Image (tube, rainbow, N blue to C red; front, side):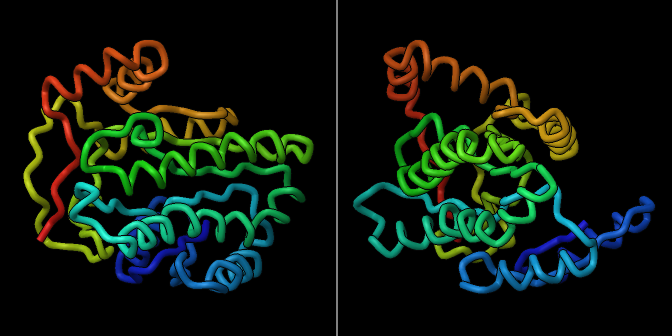
Length: 239
């Protein structure tokens, strides 16, 4: 297994945990917003593992705020990571997946189905990933490559601790989400692994997320009324 991301300390800690479980993991520092980083990471992974048969494009963060509080640079920064970072990952590994008839996993979001006030930048990026997964699913099927879109709802993570510039903060702002709506990370991970193993086209993670997507598809007027009636909006930016 190859682990590629910006934060070396987190990668090494995860690699150690995987090692204690009897598996091998290599660590590759990588930034999906830099041209060439993904190609170098893929080369190192190829050299260490011999082949690539599952690729997960997971890098992402959330720019939050109303339109009038954001700038074009905020939107560019959001799309650079969440959309072009995914594309860089795909381009760097596509030929490997064709050779192995492997699996391409794109991490989207329920926000790629349902947009709420204050989440325009993040939702734009995840709607784009949703569209990319749908198109690539058709394009890569003749090569035997399965494309799986993962659309998480509320899952335990640190995304709420990352500000609009992509900087991690020690404390996230409080968000009034009932604990019953938030899925534990290990539970979500098991569901993702199962979906990838079964070569599913898409899986929506969390019951609340599934309900929101169903409402959006079959009763969008009702979902819009709920969002406005209860003042549902995107999270606040951490400071």
